[in-house]
Length: 526
Image (cartoon, rainbow, N blue to C red; front, top):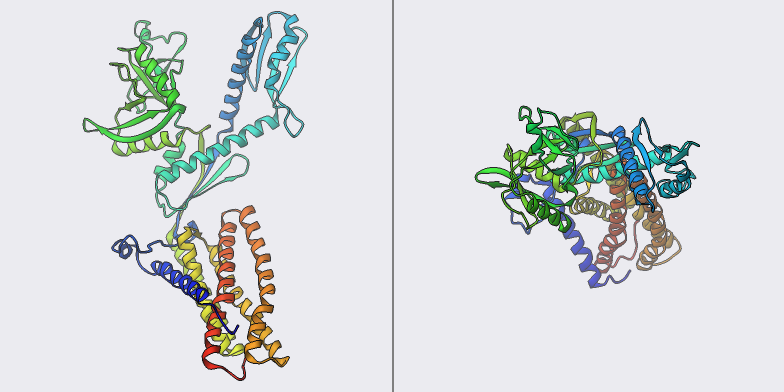
């Protein structure tokens, strides 16, 4: 204790200065910060939905769509496996019926070969159930039914996919610190702090954004309006744009898109797209073989446009034109960049949280924090005198360090987070209390002031670390296992633990060390 190394003094001072510098922007308006040089700290603490208001959306994945796609995919897999067998296995009436896939073998003696061919479609799950239940009658009628566990696993996988894509779409809009998380088996909670009008976000999230490219069926014009086999009639993107008959076959899939950007062509908003290697080859082949024919671009079952292929497009890039507004082109580019949703999402709950509620919460948090700080300051001075003043200086710096950490890390401060900070106020002086009580014991044992201080800090160190590590473990568990509000509490608690250990073990020790070397006290009043 008789010496505090210069390098350690410089480190402590540097951390304290940075803590103050990075906290100051929170006391300055954003307009003022915009006028400052870029190299100066300018991050504000991000406030959560409960503090600054915003929008709350609860989305539900369309499970019926997932089940239908599962059955369609299952029937296609059956067809592929039976045709791939050598020799080919004959079948008839392969179709989706209700919640099953059914077909009948042409020859009953092919049952064993058929069973072997479609066995890979029924995988054993860890629960002991199979993904699909296969039933075969003596006459060769086959029924394949997805199991409940198989459906549940597929829904869970789709929800995980949807969460990732929703996150990409929301992040592209520039909303700060959105909360996107699973709620239940098939729901996704989306909280958008600071967003008062969620209509644009709802429109973006409500679109599946499945894009495909098809050839237009020109034979439909001379067929008395009837749709030929292998084709389908789709509406335009906007009401009143008429319909277009397109070939069912997907020539190029939107899954092969690599990038999409809103731009202008001849003064009109358009979307520039770029394919990956596979998509570029497919697009080049199709446009080379169909020069002069219209090529339909389909988004979520509606034809965006059907331009004529004037020449082969071999560079892997193309332009999507249509009746776009600037915002519409930007939103379409955003959707294509983020990727298609694996299933439609339905908004089942929508709420807007006004900023007044958040302001009241912040005000209540300020009052509680001030009362807590003042009470702790008074208690420490009355109980420990000059040492209590040192503890209060450490407490003040602890608050600055917490504010700086929240600003730099971009962590979102919520109402439970304020509770975590207020809890930290008490914990911040807890370590100093342990040290000061240990110093008192050493003085009562007859040690001189310098030895007592040195021994007090050294012997209290293990206890301080033990107490804070156990609390830190609890904070980590809360962060990993908890939901949004609980995580907010865990973040501020964890940051508070680290900052309080720094101020109690290093900052207060440095201050007392300087005082001891200057005053050389013969006695201590602790």
